[in-house]
Image (cartoon, rainbow, N blue to C red; front, side, top):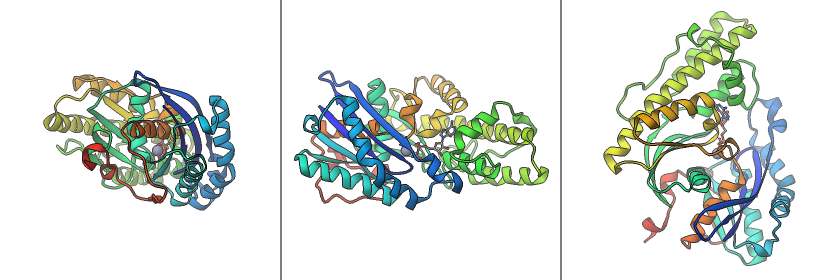
Length: 350
Ligand code: KG4
Ligand code: ZN
């Protein structure tokens, strides 16, 4: 089974070809990602209209390259999958419409993939992880702890009440003049910073529910920065280190609560799986690793290139859905908002 996957929900234009072997294991035949970082750099964040236009300009070429790299023709694929949301709607429409056109021309099935579901299932592509597992999904738009029990069977255990973790990293970077995207920049600065120099709050710490709150931390950081302005290089590094330590502490505590809720409701998870761009952060990874061991399970984190947005994860979600006969009609709509719990799978549809 071979699926072409297309991803255009944010600022990465991506396409990939993924195969599922007879034993159920996945193989990435190609994975082409083009980041629009340079287009958005001057604005300190993603500009939706610029993103949509850039997707239009290069997507056809990216799809062509994904096929060429995989050594396949359109006639070799079994289905075409595209992220149909959630995301910036202009970009989502570009990717989904392209997939619809390919489906129409080739007569192959279309699969409208939820972008979050694709992040959630990546561990099955890379590690063949069995259900049910506990998922920590942390990206620029989402911070959630979920029970992944099957395709289309996702139970929300914890959510952010305000900002996403990636968004907090991005805003911190912007405040400190580190540019965009913020996560990697803050992580790099934090390496040479003294985290103990500033006392930052850890909202929600110790609470039994598994929710997150980041906005108080963000405000506290801004106030500390204003107190010592103008900032020199060491100030920036120290602020980054303090921020990253506070977030890492929060993740540690909130995952503890999430794993506890998981066990109470569903028994032992097969793994703690991390997904989304924030999982690229080494300190957060270390914390998740310890947390998983303490919680009697293992941590699975896909390689960084598969944690951030890419086409292979969309293609793989397409593979998983195609295997269950879950294809979509050409009329399917692009969705700016599409919570993971609303994704329908076989169990709920039956
Ligand atoms: O999953 P992703 O590529 O795109 C979304 O769907 O949002 O995640 C991007 C987010 C950005 O907010 C970025 O700052 C954050 O992930 N990120 C990081 C790191 N690398 C990316 N955050 C912390 N540390 C990192 N190393
Ligand atoms: Zn994403």
